[in-house]
Length: 173
Image (spheres, rainbow, N blue to C red):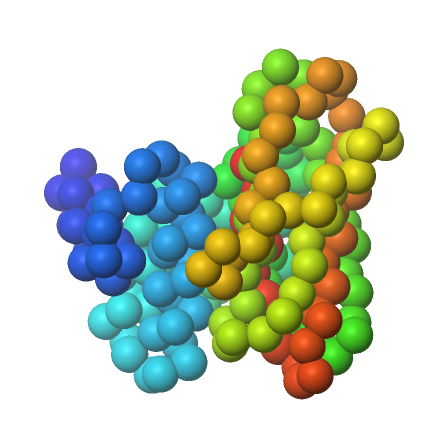
Protein backbone atom coordinates (compact mmCIF):
# COMPACT_ATOMS: atom_id res chain seq x y z
CA UNK A 1 0.00 0.00 0.00
CA UNK A 2 2.82 2.42 0.84
CA UNK A 3 4.51 1.67 -2.48
CA UNK A 4 1.31 2.49 -4.40
CA UNK A 5 0.85 5.75 -2.50
CA UNK A 6 4.52 6.68 -3.09
CA UNK A 7 4.28 5.82 -6.79
CA UNK A 8 1.05 7.75 -7.28
CA UNK A 9 2.44 10.72 -5.35
CA UNK A 10 5.71 10.68 -7.28
CA UNK A 11 3.81 10.39 -10.55
CA UNK A 12 1.56 13.32 -9.65
CA UNK A 13 4.63 15.44 -8.93
CA UNK A 14 6.28 14.36 -12.20
CA UNK A 15 3.19 14.94 -14.31
CA UNK A 16 2.14 18.18 -12.59
CA UNK A 17 -1.34 16.88 -11.67
CA UNK A 18 -2.77 13.49 -10.81
CA UNK A 19 -4.17 11.76 -13.93
CA UNK A 20 -7.76 10.58 -13.64
CA UNK A 21 -7.49 6.83 -14.42
CA UNK A 22 -5.03 3.94 -14.77
CA UNK A 23 -4.64 4.43 -18.52
CA UNK A 24 -3.84 8.14 -18.14
CA UNK A 25 -1.51 7.34 -15.21
CA UNK A 26 0.32 4.78 -17.34
CA UNK A 27 0.79 7.30 -20.16
CA UNK A 28 2.02 9.91 -17.64
CA UNK A 29 4.42 7.43 -15.97
CA UNK A 30 5.90 6.38 -19.31
CA UNK A 31 6.24 10.01 -20.44
CA UNK A 32 7.97 10.92 -17.14
CA UNK A 33 10.24 7.87 -17.28
CA UNK A 34 11.30 8.53 -20.88
CA UNK A 35 11.98 12.15 -19.99
CA UNK A 36 14.01 11.10 -16.94
CA UNK A 37 15.97 8.61 -19.02
CA UNK A 38 16.76 11.27 -21.66
CA UNK A 39 17.98 13.75 -19.03
CA UNK A 40 19.74 11.23 -16.76
CA UNK A 41 17.42 11.78 -13.79
CA UNK A 42 17.55 8.43 -11.95
CA UNK A 43 14.99 9.48 -9.31
CA UNK A 44 12.47 10.33 -12.01
CA UNK A 45 12.93 6.99 -13.81
CA UNK A 46 12.72 5.11 -10.48
CA UNK A 47 9.47 6.90 -9.60
CA UNK A 48 8.08 6.10 -13.06
CA UNK A 49 9.10 2.42 -12.68
CA UNK A 50 7.35 2.27 -9.29
CA UNK A 51 4.23 3.86 -10.75
CA UNK A 52 4.14 1.36 -13.64
CA UNK A 53 4.51 -1.55 -11.21
CA UNK A 54 1.75 -0.19 -8.97
CA UNK A 55 -0.54 0.21 -11.99
CA UNK A 56 0.16 -3.32 -13.23
CA UNK A 57 1.31 -1.93 -16.59
CA UNK A 58 3.46 -4.28 -18.64
CA UNK A 59 5.15 -4.36 -22.05
CA UNK A 60 3.46 -6.09 -24.95
CA UNK A 61 4.89 -9.54 -25.68
CA UNK A 62 8.45 -9.28 -26.98
CA UNK A 63 8.87 -5.59 -26.09
CA UNK A 64 11.37 -4.14 -23.62
CA UNK A 65 10.15 -3.86 -20.02
CA UNK A 66 10.92 -0.20 -19.34
CA UNK A 67 10.04 -0.43 -15.63
CA UNK A 68 12.50 -3.31 -15.13
CA UNK A 69 15.09 -1.49 -17.24
CA UNK A 70 14.73 1.66 -15.13
CA UNK A 71 15.14 -0.43 -11.98
CA UNK A 72 18.12 -2.32 -13.49
CA UNK A 73 16.33 -5.71 -13.40
CA UNK A 74 15.75 -8.46 -15.95
CA UNK A 75 12.37 -8.41 -17.72
CA UNK A 76 9.77 -11.12 -16.95
CA UNK A 77 8.13 -12.83 -19.93
CA UNK A 78 4.55 -11.78 -20.73
CA UNK A 79 2.04 -13.46 -23.00
CA UNK A 80 -0.46 -11.48 -25.00
CA UNK A 81 -3.65 -10.72 -23.15
CA UNK A 82 -6.72 -8.73 -23.97
CA UNK A 83 -6.61 -6.33 -21.03
CA UNK A 84 -3.97 -3.67 -20.36
CA UNK A 85 -2.51 -1.32 -19.75
CA UNK A 86 0.31 -2.54 -21.98
CA UNK A 87 3.06 -0.51 -23.60
CA UNK A 88 5.69 -0.64 -26.31
CA UNK A 89 8.78 1.53 -26.89
CA UNK A 90 10.02 1.85 -30.50
CA UNK A 91 12.25 4.04 -32.68
CA UNK A 92 11.07 5.17 -36.11
CA UNK A 93 13.15 6.76 -38.85
CA UNK A 94 11.75 9.78 -40.76
CA UNK A 95 8.77 8.55 -42.76
CA UNK A 96 8.93 5.22 -40.87
CA UNK A 97 5.84 3.20 -40.00
CA UNK A 98 5.12 0.62 -37.32
CA UNK A 99 2.05 -1.62 -37.11
CA UNK A 100 0.88 -4.11 -34.51
CA UNK A 101 -2.29 -6.00 -33.72
CA UNK A 102 -3.96 -6.02 -30.32
CA UNK A 103 -7.15 -7.67 -29.09
CA UNK A 104 -9.92 -5.62 -27.48
CA UNK A 105 -13.17 -6.80 -25.85
CA UNK A 106 -16.63 -5.98 -27.21
CA UNK A 107 -18.59 -3.48 -25.16
CA UNK A 108 -15.56 -2.38 -23.09
CA UNK A 109 -13.80 0.91 -23.55
CA UNK A 110 -10.68 0.53 -25.70
CA UNK A 111 -7.89 3.08 -25.71
CA UNK A 112 -4.62 3.55 -27.56
CA UNK A 113 -2.22 6.45 -26.99
CA UNK A 114 1.20 7.26 -28.43
CA UNK A 115 3.75 9.97 -27.82
CA UNK A 116 7.25 10.79 -29.09
CA UNK A 117 10.11 11.55 -26.70
CA UNK A 118 11.00 14.66 -28.76
CA UNK A 119 8.68 17.22 -30.37
CA UNK A 120 7.94 15.82 -33.85
CA UNK A 121 5.01 15.37 -36.23
CA UNK A 122 3.42 11.90 -36.18
CA UNK A 123 0.16 10.05 -36.85
CA UNK A 124 -1.58 7.24 -34.99
CA UNK A 125 -4.34 5.23 -36.68
CA UNK A 126 -6.50 2.36 -35.44
CA UNK A 127 -8.33 -0.02 -37.80
CA UNK A 128 -10.83 -2.50 -36.38
CA UNK A 129 -11.79 -3.93 -39.78
CA UNK A 130 -14.96 -1.85 -40.03
CA UNK A 131 -13.51 1.59 -39.53
CA UNK A 132 -10.12 3.30 -39.56
CA UNK A 133 -9.74 6.05 -36.99
CA UNK A 134 -7.14 8.81 -37.10
CA UNK A 135 -6.39 9.57 -33.49
CA UNK A 136 -6.45 13.14 -32.24
CA UNK A 137 -3.14 14.68 -31.15
CA UNK A 138 -3.15 17.09 -28.19
CA UNK A 139 -0.12 18.35 -26.29
CA UNK A 140 2.17 15.89 -28.06
CA UNK A 141 0.10 12.75 -27.32
CA UNK A 142 -2.17 10.97 -29.81
CA UNK A 143 -5.29 9.35 -28.31
CA UNK A 144 -7.92 6.98 -29.69
CA UNK A 145 -10.87 6.03 -27.50
CA UNK A 146 -13.79 3.84 -28.61
CA UNK A 147 -16.04 0.93 -27.62
CA UNK A 148 -15.65 -2.08 -29.96
CA UNK A 149 -18.87 -3.70 -31.16
CA UNK A 150 -17.16 -7.11 -31.49
CA UNK A 151 -14.25 -8.72 -29.62
CA UNK A 152 -11.34 -8.99 -31.98
CA UNK A 153 -7.97 -7.88 -33.17
CA UNK A 154 -7.36 -4.26 -34.05
CA UNK A 155 -4.49 -2.99 -36.20
CA UNK A 156 -2.61 -0.05 -34.66
CA UNK A 157 -0.39 2.01 -37.00
CA UNK A 158 2.11 4.68 -36.00
CA UNK A 159 3.85 6.91 -38.55
CA UNK A 160 6.78 9.29 -38.03
CA UNK A 161 5.88 12.28 -40.22
CA UNK A 162 8.90 14.24 -39.02
CA UNK A 163 12.29 14.82 -40.58
CA UNK A 164 14.40 13.01 -37.97
CA UNK A 165 14.43 9.69 -36.12
CA UNK A 166 12.37 9.57 -32.94
CA UNK A 167 11.52 7.21 -30.08
CA UNK A 168 7.83 6.62 -29.47
CA UNK A 169 5.83 4.94 -26.70
CA UNK A 170 2.51 3.25 -27.51
CA UNK A 171 0.09 2.47 -24.63
CA UNK A 172 -2.99 0.24 -25.02
CA UNK A 173 -5.88 -0.78 -22.77
